[in-house]
Length: 186
Length: 396
Image (cartoon, rainbow over the protein chains, first blue to last red):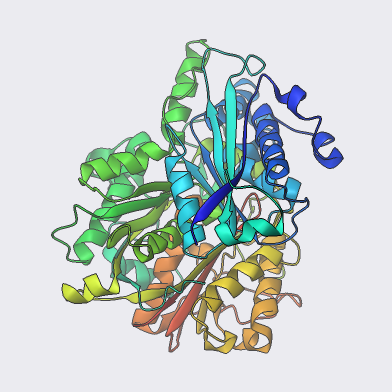
């Protein structure tokens, strides 16, 4: 059984607000610490809608494979600046957990109750390794379905509101499973 | 489920930790089994602060040419990788791949640049380097043509890097993978754990009633994974085989573990099921065992949930009681401890253990190592973001 793609999403940080209307109330009402976290959660929310997957998922049937480039350094910079400016008092317990690259995937797993494999791959240019590994996990039957994609800096000169970040994800699964949800192959 | 059975073996190991960092694998193992404590009270090297923290650092003066801490990470990663390649007696490995787990891989250079830009009162520029540059530079240096992958799953990074490497071989992507983890002490990370109140002010006492937190450490560990066919063909020495691996998410909290160990129990169960083993067939558990109140209780609950009554008969040790918590390297260090426990038929102790916690009532090998016939060993890891991973090794 070959893996098929049954859902896609791609959003930029300059149009987060306009794409959230179709999302579940629980996601629209979530409080976010930073814009990258918000962008990632919203992008996966749109993806699950597109793939016709009900939320919360609540089991280990879905795995999550997230690629991230050096956009994560924006969060680290904010945390480090606090320490440099105020010493130990500037070390934010709220920001510190976000300095590890898997924090974005973690928030996605919490938001949608995704309990399967959760792998974050720091990668410089594209999500090739992420998609490739997700496909390997499906063909190797380590997981039945996978969310694969990531977040990257689109243009370093832009602010967040102007579209600094972009997130794109694919929902992929073994071909025989798609009929269960009525989703379409893409 | 595709089983890892009889497919992937380990033929070389390399390890650099604060315990006898340049003494080789045997000296490391002997120090570990004699319960040597590498955790000392130390000040932060970069930030100008009076206060000292408990941490396990590799003695900087022991490096050739007294290298800067900025280069320390590259140096220990390179050293551990070369050790593993030499141990495996590999002469031809151009087609090998590299799978590296790290969390703070780019942090030392970053810290230094940030402090310099602060001194010059200029605005910090963003980093141009992703964490993946460490993996890439190691692969380029060793002329590796196989799959190159960086994993950053908090404190499960090292375990995941090895598990993913085993799957790459299983899936026929290559016949040799070098896999492991590396991380170094960072002033900013220490302050982060400090404000989360996760650091202990006295000894690290995993599973003890009076445990009060963790101490950070550093290190690098690599292993050479090969398809069994390839290893047998070149008559390689074999430490053991990968019998199962699983990653699972708590989906519960960004910094705290699920209180009942839901994700970790699921990961252990999945890893064991890949080889169709029964719980009583596991001979040794190398625990994540950080020494924090919540981790150790959660881990005990997860082990009991999976192993049932057999949980009381399996020796469990926390090597972090001696080595500290080396973030992305810890999973790889502890995986090597599992292989060495099978090779030497000895399980390392959990040191600083004084008083039994009624809720943590398993056999944690308190204070003294012991002989034990280890034929199967499992290494457990858990981390920020509700990450959980388990990797199971067995003798061929």
